Amino acid sequence: MKKLFTFLSVVLYTSAYAQPFNEYTKNWATYFGGEGTRLIHSALDVEGNFIVAGPILGGTLQALQNENYYNQFITTQSSNFLYNANLVQNSNSNQSIIAKFSPQGTLLQAVYVPFEIFNLKIDLTNNLYISGSSRLTNLATPNAWFTSPSNPGLVYGILVKLNSDFTTNWLTYLPTDSNTKICLDENFNIYGASHSYIA
Image (cartoon, rainbow, N blue to C red; front, side, top):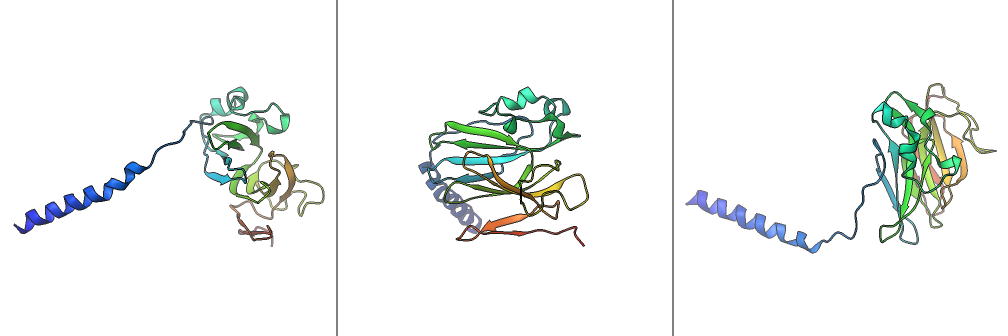
């Protein structure tokens, strides 16, 4: 009798617990991005648009070297925002895609940037703050903190502020190539934490 009571209790509890889930409905969903795309960062801008971003991590070498394949997912033909097969090494691409969707799910804008995104934050005027890494040594803007990489290696840490249209406001190299965590305070000062290779 005791065993039967325990079994009935579990069944009744499980049934009652599952009930609330039928109140959720899907508004929209979409597939987006090419092979190896990892949309692992997201933010909402002040208009309620949904911004997603992430690196191209892994994939077949044949696909990663096919620029036309990846460029079908973006909304511009500006050379600053195109996928670059020269940034492919082995089975990885040191690039990321950033896309903006309306609240209704319409793709508004999508671009590639020549660095891997580690962290993404947004401010009240829709500027994006990104930490990441790049294999390129010529991305820094004039008067940046570090206008060229200060650490040895094949990839270099970067910190970048993008305008709401995803153009670069400023970009500096960081004295690290590791995953730098960033956060913003109420005045949008940037704080970061990482280990450094500078002695």
